[in-house]
Length: 281
Image (tube, rainbow, N blue to C red; front, side, top):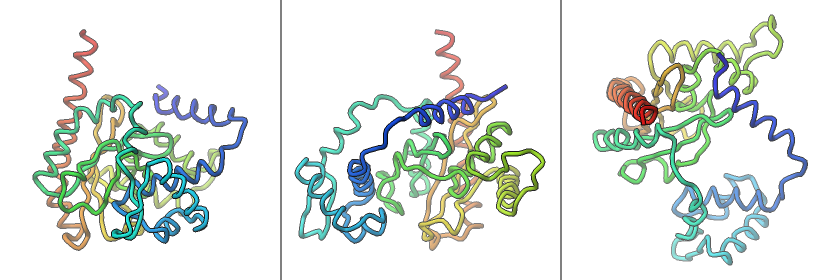
């Protein structure tokens, strides 16, 4: 049976193909800057330049526009720019979270209460996973300022690797083709990159969890993630992030994996029970 993710990906690709106009460049750049500002308490022009790779004059013009619109403030005492409460209005039209987030909040909060490190829940979107919920605000030790709505790769980030390793085989092949990790024509020999990813996914599936690629930034922290498995599909992934200076990989897996897996099973069970109740109603 063709998975719903396969159908969704094809539909999204078709929608993108039918777009007959180019995006407004200045708007795209301003949104990119606003997104980066939203990830940090305070951002300097230099920081924004390094992160977005945009020219500094472009960044200054965008910041002046955001300042006049009331979305950003510049406090000389903090030596940088920061978002204002007005950014909350940009999400006012969004209602509701995926079911896995609704039922997973309590487990994520419990993980942070137990370990102090931030937990997160991600779901698939096109060829990436997107963080839908995070307990960063509840954690005194978070390596990040904000991660909600952050897109993460399927082949390098823990939350993505966990999804890719445990999703149904037909969905996995579709996603790997979309990522460019599989040759389009059957019978072609696998290249080295494809072989390494397949080996990594097999290892993740066998051990029951994934970790962020150590070469992926930020290298000062690591994430351990596990799948939240529903009936014949992966509902999402659950992860815990910590500083590498606090634990080595072996210590972290020994400390966190078992509890993460129990939490993921609980989320899956509660989600399926809610679906049954909805069907009954």
